[in-house]
Image (cartoon, rainbow, N blue to C red; front, top):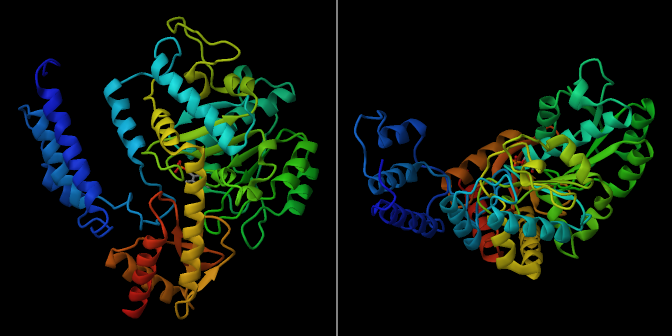
Length: 462
Ligand SMILES: *Cc1c(COP(=O)(O)O)cnc(C)c1O
């Protein structure tokens, strides 16, 4: 063990920015896909642990060198795969500080510095997203766990409403909780409710853009009056579409259901007056899941679980133990009362830094830059011979296809191998599609031009 007062810290830490800046600086020219696979990187790292110590600085330098060929250019402004954000400078630097500070962010009284930054970030997010200011905000690893956290609060609340205390009685033998989802919900919703012991959801159809069919939802709600959760979506993975929140929330609340909204990237539409109409009435739901590591462009991992009724959040996630010096009050729960974990890093701090760096206008500009880029990308792609843009492009997702699946897949393979731009393949409405998710803060008109040139040249090369 190296004594902290030796020069090991400065030497090891100095090696990191050097490698980091080399990586960030190369992103604009480097082919986006990794050049080697997992086994090659293991060879380069050295497979055996060995008995002897290695100097910390040497560990950092050799790690950076061995891993670099296996890195995917995810922070590139021409990376459109899945739904993946980049990293803004202030957020990245704040993330490094979070590691150096090494605060176990569970209790307000113990780590007031980072809790203050997280609480401000939480308040700002509620404001930017137009959500009820009294809501509880928990910083979790991603929207998967945000969905899980919110749906845990939902499950326990709808059971409490019928006199069943799942925290004491468990689930077995209790009333069945029905979870109603749209056909095109994100798979993580199913995953979350499975982990919550709720089984499989009841699926109602979606329309051609992937929005939940509100008439079908109304019919399903009428079938059964037991404990019910309705999961809506802000931002469909393929089309970017938003559910009709006003109509769906009215029906669900009339039936006594809890409404949860999965808005991993789409909730950010609220930050611009141009796209705010897409999320009108979304604030009337009971809980919301979103990500900071997508649209907001903070480093992994940061998701946000928001529950309108703090008592529901704390009933599901709160914990008391004799050794925790509790400081929570009605106004201020401890951080661990709003997330599944006790020990965790101060992952909300990079979100604070990103928001402070941008300011309100910067967040609006970010959302508008992404939607403008998606619109320009769709227009440019639709001008390529034989390329069809599927669905309306309302936000940041652009799905395209050629005449048949083989033609689309061949084009996608050439584009990705070429390495200038990266879009992932998917299936939507029975077709192979190439999906461009515009989620990087650096994607602007110039990057769209380079992407369109790469897409045209991949098509020409077939
Ligand atoms: C990305 C995404 C998720 C899952 O979020 P993670 O951050 O990957 O856990 C859930 N729902 C939607 C709509 C998404 O786009």
